[in-house]
Image (cartoon, rainbow, N blue to C red; front, top):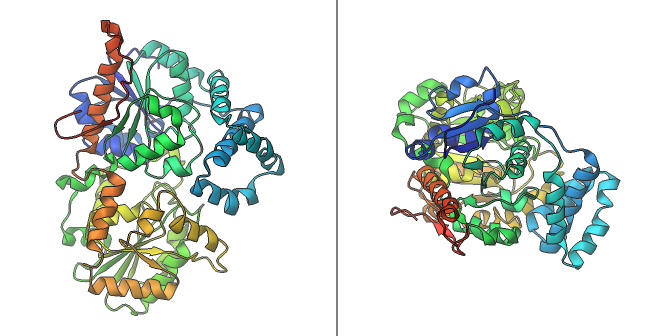
Length: 492
């Protein structure tokens, strides 16, 4: 359906449940809707099974346009050439680590052959010129005829992408750029700038969580220094402050089959496509089941994007003291998944009521630290034979986003399964250990911890709309006045 939007409307793109829940449950949309009309295009809205999650959203919600991939040649090969060139020029520890430990073993010989010309581009300092030419080429490739048609009719005042590193959203951004519609990009998470593939498209401004992310944005994307970079905090954590999602320990435990009088150990799993972390969860579950940690209970929480029930079926066999949550919508594609209020309530209270959290270098470290719960962080590969031991060490001690966390003193880095058990046992007795360092982790990653990051993001967008209007009123001031913007309680 092609529909014209109200004058001054903001169009927001979302292609992941990680940003859906920010739109649905943070302070962002209520604040923005007080001032301007808002339309959301969401990939989860394509699914009839998931549309119910959007029913209470006050914005207009529409399904995401159909998009197609770039042709492999020349587009994807040139993109890889560009990424190699920037990697060799900037030497980012995280991406070079992934290249050494993973991509060199999985990429084809043809792709790896692009390293030689990429080294030459980096040596001659031509990476910015290459990326500009690549951007012009990619913008001309028609990835979404539907997006062009709908944007031509809608004519929003501003398009905001919440996933500039993902597959779907850049296709719509390209259509907007062709039509002269201004764009703004939210950097979805704290690790994206240093670990993800490059954002080839440039934007009229950026939204980041923290001052640290702003510095990384300017380092990895020099062209971003010419446009606003708004520091707004992490809107996805706003829900932790909302009492409507809080349950008492008794209520939460009743819903999970847990006993409120016994300590709760949480092992939160990351992506199974990255590291085989479930081996550590199984070992811990076996020790809990045998009673080696006393009268405790273990909750294993799969990542909601990757939970298809496979690991859960194996882990549930560990016995009555081990509980496995179902966090995802098994059978649905990742872009079709979203989370309803019940799932958000479970997420919030799982971290509120856990006594110790175990994970392998993921964002749940921040979730746990937010509630001042001790964090045990694996510093070893739990898979038998440890095929990714060197990669795990790099993540904790070299990767740009996680090294400061791992070495902050706010997490207990454990070197083997036995030390993992001992760390859990110690933290259960002394949860006050490393409290000040945990507080630093939250402030370092999130920038703000007041539950108003969504509202700050809304005010940033309103500020950006005002800046876009200035040339129309005869001002000679460009969209960027050379100053970066940081929100406070008094505005911008």
